[in-house]
Length: 342
Image 1 (cartoon, one colour):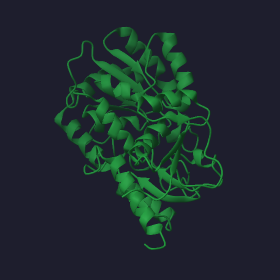
Image 2 (cartoon, rainbow, N blue to C red; image 1 turned 120 degrees about the horizontal axis):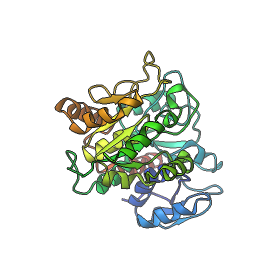
Image 3 (tube, rainbow, N blue to C red; image 1 turned 90 degrees about the vertical axis):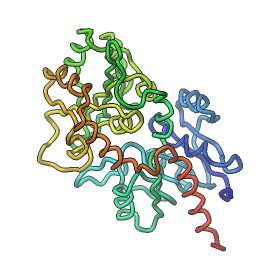
């Protein structure tokens, strides 16, 4: 049974598009409106590569619902209502009320929240008690798992092993959200120059221009699309990036957690700080990076088991691989409940 009416979508950043596009593509043809990408022509190409025709611009005027994955995109459509897809891994910060994170109270005109898990759903219900919330898992993870090809499970015997670095954006709402790559760059460069590993450089889209320039300057292979990291890497090294849990879930391979002096050990945000890394391998001293990478690649039973606990906590096993399908089912239920005849 199709949803009544046409649904548009808007994604003005690659990480938004990675979450919105699978849901939009899973809608029936009669329900798919226009997929907008703002002003970024590159996003038209990435959408087309995934089978969706996209347009420059924004949804305008009063009309049907718009699927979004970020509050900044909502601001571009002042007369529309939204289906809000949780992007990232569901991290939130104690004492911070931000529309960028689950439980933010400043996201008006949302008709339906599509969220990751029971933890993020509880936050959304508390902050937005009058809005339906549905747990669907991560639509982005559906696609990333496909890009893992036949490389799921233990790291392959790459020669040399492939190690990717993935960095969070520089966001100033808390010390734990700020950029750490300046602290780690000298050690990453030394690692690359040692030749012991094939080093890939990735990072948050908001930082990509700066990061790519540095990677290219020092000769590190810059990889913009995280799906390409998933397809190649034996290990990802992350600070506070959602790519860590996503990589672990998509591939079954290890993560090295990079800490920084600004991270407050006495502050418990949950998630990355400090639940997820427990039992896995972390590093907080740049001079120890090669040794900690070797330990992470060894992937002990303890680390592998702890990583699986993290993955199952963030991404419900029953939702993995079918998040887009579950999202469309949730949209259909919301649509039926909203009709006058029930």
